[in-house]
Length: 282
Image (cartoon, rainbow, N blue to C red; front, side, top):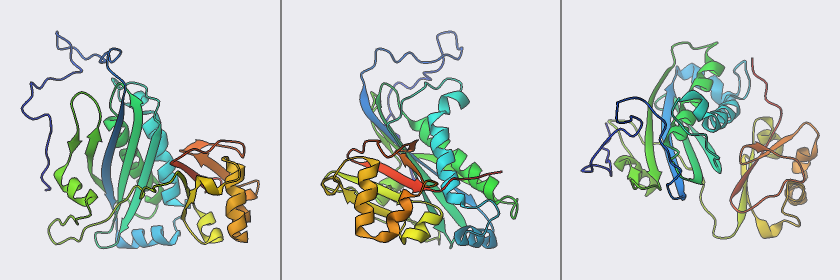
C-alpha cells in the first residue's frame, strides 16, 4: 500500500455533516469565501487479458468503450448531489477523465479531475466520476467478462478551501515525474494534459474520428484561429489537413468542456473541445 499524508492531521477533527444532536445535516457554506478548488481521484477495473484485448481493438459489442465511459464519468460528476444525499449542487468549471490501459496488470486505470471556483470542495465529484466511469466500463464489457473487479477508488489530491491541501504522497512523486512501483508491477503514467505557455485549446477526436483524422489529440494556439469559436477551429484544422473535413459533417458532434456545443460556441484559453460521432448504448 502506498503511504499517504493527511494535511489535517493534528487539527481538532470533527464530522461536519453531523449537527450538535448527532443528526445528519447539509453544511451551510454561505459564509465561506469563494476559492479555486480542485480534486483528483483515481481507480481501476481489472479484467481478463482477452477482454482487455477486445477493448483495445474496439471489438466489444457495445462499441467505443472509453468514449462512453468518459461521458458517463462527466455526467456523474455533474450530478453527484443527486446521488450523495448531503452534497451540494455545484457549478463545475472543468471535469476531465483519463484512461490508461495497463496490459501488464490487465486493467484500465481511470483518473478524474474536477475544478470550480466556489465555497465547497469537489472531492466527491471526482470520486463519483471515477466510480461511474469504472461501472460503465463494466457495463460495456460484461457481455464477455462478468468476473471484472473494480477497486482502488481513492482521492489522490485536493486543493483550495480552509482545511488546506491534501496530497497522497505516492501521487506527489508521480506528478513530479518519478515512477510509482508497487511490488513487482511497473508504474503507469496518467496525465491530464501538459500545459502550454500561450493561450491554447486542446482538441480530442473520439471513437471512429481518431482513425479518420489520423490522431487522437491536438493542441491549437488560440492566435492560430481566425475566429475563437468552433467554426474557426474546424476551419483551422481543415486548412492543416483535408482529413479534418470530417469535422464538418452533420453527424459529427462537438462538446466544449463536456458541454454540447454548436459552430457558434465560443472557445477560450484551456478549453477542451471534443469531436465525436453519436454514441449509442444498450
